[in-house]
Image 1 (cartoon, rainbow, N blue to C red):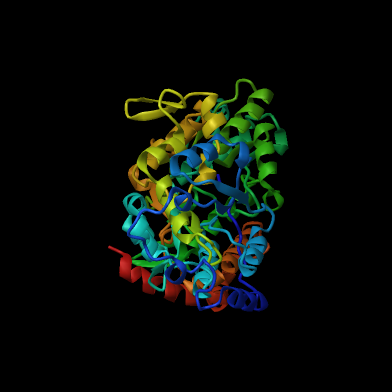
Image 2 (image 1 turned 90 degrees about the horizontal axis):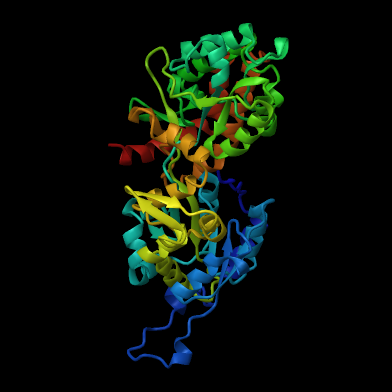
Length: 515
């Protein structure tokens, strides 16, 4: 659901500016250990005890000045916060400049993917961030109660905590969506195995339930995502890296990847896969589905309402359903379950109020305040029934719709339950989420094994270009521009391009944590 930020390494000249701006002598109020005043044994006068106004730079944001959540947090925490949001376009460039120029932000939230971890670790190693370890120990009662030791451990750089991580909700987001009314027309059931999926796609092509003739598209996918959710699970390669006999192996070094490519290439040759898939964009695929051209697409449950509206406008009797986790020939199955960090929040050395920044984050994680921020007040914003939270509309959307923008760490025990109220804003949303997360066999869920990995320098540096290398190769093989006879040569090139170094680094870490 959330747009990931793409980070770049700091240019050498910018790194030098950053180092000189931050210094190593603790000058400026950003150095928690050197600049924090010694605690007083007497209560200061009321005028001196007034809490300072904090400056926060968030990933995304609403109109903070008019948002009722901001007003509620100010009342409950006692801190007035001047919020700003990073730009959507090239946010990493803006952030690099702000950090290098020592802009006095007290709180900064960034993405949580491997690239974001890399730039966070780079900032920490270059002395641009406040070591939060002693501040959390002193002022972080709610932080320590809300975040698991595992979460805080994964945020460490060189043994110190420089950020408050926000854990992702562990859930399945995407899978194959199929036109149920097309299945009814060809007299078939929702497929549960790879062979059954192939048979359904053939029936869609031969029996033309969409009435498109030669233009009928059994399955459409995007050109930049040739690794199709659910289908990859039937080959045991659900995630970019998967456990194979106790080792984490990337797809490019996994023989199952070759089998997957052979299957997808065969679908393409038979005309069961969109012949234009290599140039398809996300909007193109959705349009082909809602216009009645395609029978199967990959869809995130969050996209169901607009898809449903458009589809029903064109075909009032249309019906659709998620295909459950497909079983492969050897019984392998899997749906990718998100795991890791949604975002990372740190305190720059240029902060004028590092202690207050942690006090504010801690106050937000007070159980009652956090619940109020997440889903509002019972009877006003939500109701509670049978152990579940239900939004009261439209006030829930109006006054708590932007709650995720304020997250700086979560109540990891309760937030996954609170969060479901957000999914219940639309019955179609909840049904889609439920189909993927409540109606699957437990063994179908496969967490990303690197989701909670610490900063791994080689992997972080090479991950993006290696991932692109795999995707480009997959597209070429599927459309027939390259032959699978060259698979071993591709794997060798992948290893030389950084894959082997990443493999060694990742498995050295994995050996210390696997059970």
